[in-house]
Length: 119
Image 1: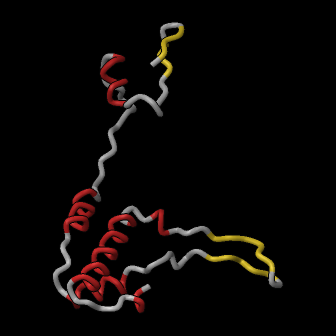
Image 2 (image 1 turned 180 degrees about the vertical axis):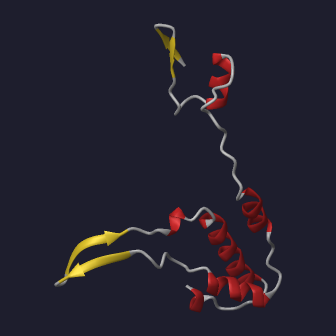
Image 3 (image 1 turned 90 degrees about the horizontal axis):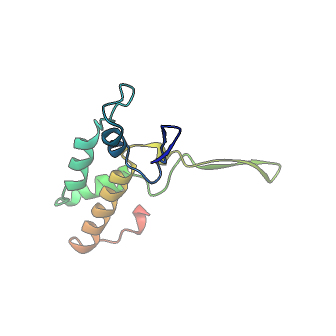
């Protein structure tokens, strides 16, 4: 935090906002810590162990290998636009991709199945 004319200049890329509140002295009534209400679901998905071949196959089929919404817009054989992958906007994207990866690993390592059909 830099001080000029008795007013702090905050560089949020380098300073933790919680430290700023403690250093400035007092709580800012406009600063509300974010509550992550999806954290229990994220933790549950991360800790879920795959120990059933049917469940592993179901998860591998349910979670797509790549984003189904990403498209190139073509007109007369020329690309005029691109729709970016929207899956990254899903707050559980990383957990679902990890779960799919663990399901595929279970199918290969424990069941000895060929997973080419899921890719």
